[in-house]
Length: 93
Image (tube, rainbow, N blue to C red; front, top):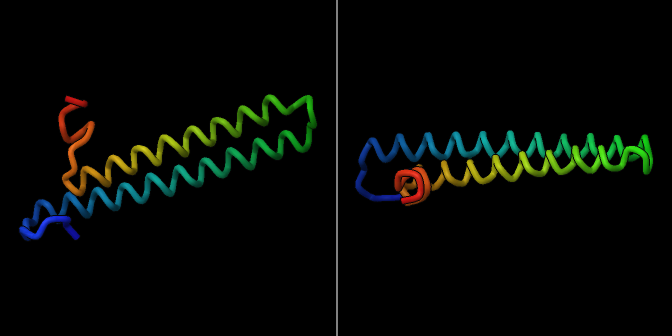
């Protein structure tokens, strides 16, 4: 539901879309992050110390994707609530 009490249909649609896309972005990021960590740990476990740098890199990429998707999701959620931020203010003005 919209965060304001003005019953504005545009606010409702914006809020609904922002929250929906936010949830998808965060979920996708979580799945990719977990996959990257799992793959990295598997590579490290199978190859031992020889493959540890590669395994660590895969984990780091997974964590980075997850963090980035979480940040985008939070921004979309904030935009749906009408909060000012990077996108709402016009690229950080």
